[in-house]
Length: 330
Image (cartoon, rainbow, N blue to C red; front, side, top):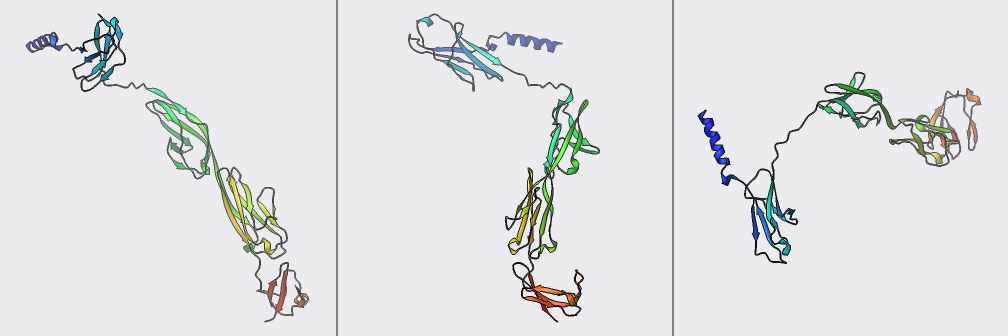
């Protein structure tokens, strides 16, 4: 009890001490002359933890256009222009000490709610994506989007596949759970599967040729072709190129291009014609069923009958329009 009593007495004595009162110091640097400026300085000669604002007042009016220095000890200086109206007025200095406590944040528990979760999403096959389904509430909710047994966390990245299209249930869970349905649509860049054409891409002069380009994509791709000659026939859907009466001028590379809003793909096929002077073995019975004694091979200089042999060795020569063949016997 004695210790507590002494402490209280000491505190009272200290607080009633005149020297313990903190007040600003005001100084007028004179003499003060009519029509001239005067320096009026207010100082705060104490180190303070908070923010200190000093104001110099002339009567009830606060002087403006003053300069304040904040460290190490705050001080403000005003330089008003003096006239006869200043005579007899009272100048004071006021100090405003702002001391704030350490801040604390209020956290209010609340049910989760979706803030940004589009109901329809379109992705492109093969791209990296994530569900961007935002939710608020406290504690911060965990958000997952699921289709069947497959579940993805909000923000988790993955590679998009066609099988990911469909309806998902997105849930936000904390002290309670809320859910929303979203629909995912998966589109794709074009990819050319193949170009259908003649076997081994070799065409005899005078034959008709059809090249068909097959591609998939979503949206459905548009087709276009690059061809050695421009006078080929292209179908209305752009998929098919037709050549009537094959000529050497049509030899070369045919390139199909499939394109939609997500990109394009190309594939090429090269058409050739049989080379000059090639050799082939022809059997007496051809695909037409003609006997060897009656089988004649047309040439540019007439015909020669194939003798009654099991086979005839011939050399084949081509001119611009049709094959010229000359029989050679073993």
